[in-house]
Image (cartoon, rainbow, N blue to C red; front, side, top):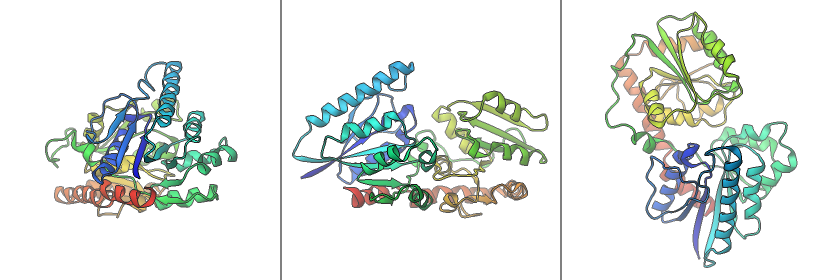
Length: 373
């Protein structure tokens, strides 16, 4: 019986999930897995393998007002249910779902699949979301216990998930893939070391702005330093914009900031053209922006959390400082600033080679087939 994977991605390019989902199912298709992608109608920069069937059941989800978006989501579920009812019974189906948080809409995804004899594979992208106080044990376990296999991206996530879930469903590591194909859609030439336009050392904080990402630490650590500029770009979460405005407009801080989602070309350009991308997080389980930065050949500086240690070799493919230690952070900034252009290029190249080798979608597809198909 031929096996078929249904990849349900309601966010698609509208939520940036195409950068994960499309390389993943393209790689599976290259291994002769029949894939069906159920998503929305937002166009992606990444080309989908022609052997993959794309169904835009969630068209216009997250587009327009909340009521309209909710209707589009529910309509997408109805279409998905109907598709499963009339599926080819000669084929064996499995469904792959993605969870960043728990909510009523996530529950509905599980509920529409329950009537069918279909294996559900759930990738837990953000373990933190399942540890909030309002996640009741009942609802959390409902999602987990109705899944054939729980997938997380690294040992840190697996260890932490085990502390909040002790059910029978197996928790397995499936690495997050690189963003090389996505990055390459927006670049056509080699990165030049001679890119500094303002004479300052450009330090970038890129991505969603959440309290756990420690932006206050950045500001306090940079105030004593000279000849730098801090560039902050990303969607604000957990802060009020007025609070961030007050923090970033400190008269002793040389800072330029832009709040909101970045267009893909601006995101890649920022990652490639800044002197260093900093990730001074207090807690993290898996960082997409780290893999995106390394795929972009950026120089990264992270705190020494376990999830980062699984990827970064200090001084080889990036740099690390002691989490919460301003002196350690400042020392690393100066170390990176004093690198020769040759050394910078070596670090950038090492970063790209590392994610190409250790976060290859082909290897991830191979392991997924062994684990779940």
